[in-house]
Length: 133
Image (tube, rainbow, N blue to C red; front, side, top):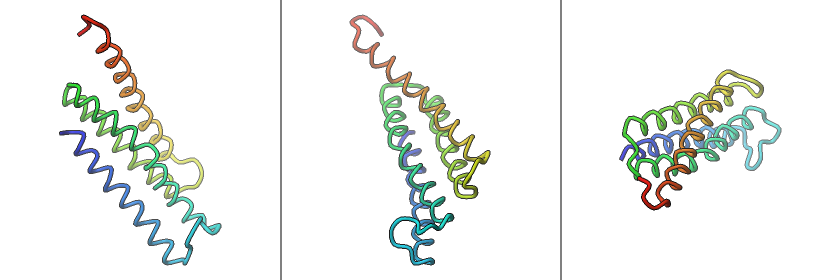
């Protein structure tokens, strides 16, 4: 399954981001919160933001694949989403304000998610209408 591959890559990204948080917490002896440490706050937000968007996107991606959407489309949507999460994490991790990585990361996160949501809604409605194929 193609979506399983993207789920695997996304999981590795989340683990990588989590390790960055844990490493910083240990080095600076900050247990909970961010202790007014801006670097830790940026690392925490990069990790948290990834975990906020990935579940919905991967559910949609897997659903589209299971209902027969073409493999190339699953790759385009999954690849765009994964790339977006990488550049967003980089952008948030390197700048607490505006950054191109953060901006484009969110645009390229929302775009495939909106496309997948629309495909899912239309596909679901279409499957519920008798004679619609």
